[in-house]
Length: 189
Length: 189
DNA sequence: TTGAATATACAGACCTGTCTGTATTTATAA
DNA sequence: TTATAAATACAGACAGGTCTGTATATTCAA
Image: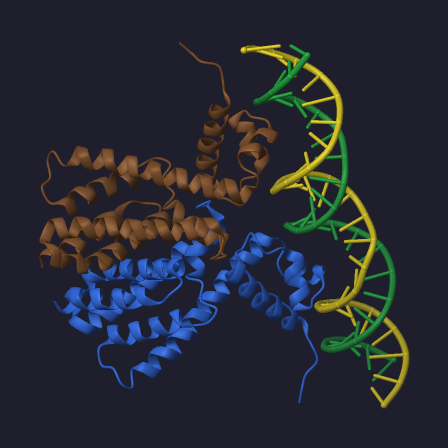
């Protein structure tokens, strides 16, 4: 049974559309008019939910963090069936991400570059996201080689970040394997 | 004796100004009007030297590659006086770069993110730059630990790239040391 | 009838790129 | 050396389009 479009539906459609367009073409390259056209909402509806484009940008980044978490949750759960090492599980999901058709790097890195201003709420949130992500990696490394291995997390984090931007520039996913191999070498000698 | 402004002076002033503004605020955030105002040239002079903004973007990236090369050349020459390991010399210069007041990451990474389109001449040039830079790192690692060590260059490259974007997002240079320590660990065990 | 989402028009700023016309410098030639 | 021609720089208005954000009027459903 199909429900009619409600207020919160519109909000959700705006978020999903803006997320997709921002990620695909860039935040500055996508105007409000295009978002409302593709989301099928009126301009006033957008400005009701998000008083300004900057507010929308922040909301989209928050929305995307949940998306990313869900994607990696699902992918890692899948790879855990065949892989033991938590780090190997992560890098298998990491590779899956790179092979996504619409892959264009990390939305938070991209947003930081585009926004330029480190005080922009979107930039601030991106900074927080990276902190949370590094903590997540720290958990994995500790799970893999014990409490002491957590000290390696910052280096593995850099490998991951470097692989992301490199894959975007090169237009291929090879960097994911380079990062994986180097991370495992750092971990297990 | 001061010479009067000549043709090539205007071109040079446009390049330097656009390079500075693009790097500082982003390519899309900086308009032609601002460039000509700060460079002190007429709009027609700019469009004579660079038929479109896209042409200017490409020229600026080419110009910056020379700048970057000159910066690292000078800095590495300086550090070679006290350091033996070529990789250590590089990472000392790398840290110097991070400590530059105007540091906002890698102009080529930033351009790739902003341009979004992998076929844009600026994006293509950025891809070439990264290839050249990785070759440069390969030379250093081979110089450090012999021909066989060249296989580690791609991993060290990822550490470097990751450190750049991380330093931008965090707003501090710590990542440079993390990358350095991990790279040396990979190289020398 | 009331409320909310819609389409549409608009304001004002900014964008890239073109155009006209003038000043200044450089090159050429008497 | 001096006069002229060519090249280049400058200033500033302008066109046509896009941007964000607001205001108004219309449709539609409860």
